[in-house]
Amino acid sequence: MFPGKINPKKMKQMMKQMGMEMEEIEGVEKVVIYTPAGNYVFDDAQVVATTMQGGTTTYQLTGEARFEEAVPEIPPDDDVALVASQAGGATEEAARAALVETRGDIAEAILKLAQQ
Image (cartoon, rainbow, N blue to C red; front, side, top):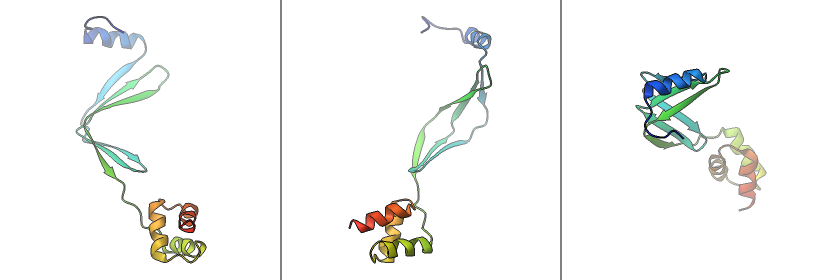
């Protein structure tokens, strides 16, 4: 896009003319991105905020990520009892395991046990 080397000062000036401002966020110790499957953890991340004309801000994240798998939540006893009774007499242990596997989705847990 840009031939040769670009002077960082000149680039900053061009961005300002286009209504863009970049600012590095100082002192970032950790950034965590939460997902259903687990969390992406960035220790000692560098974060740059870019604000565009109109007020939209985007964040650029640089660093090494590690993935921490989500720990399944233990379903409430009433959910376990409901799944066990609706799944054709499944045991509470099987109902609890199905709820953990389906991340608490009662209908999906009942279907899973009914198909076994």
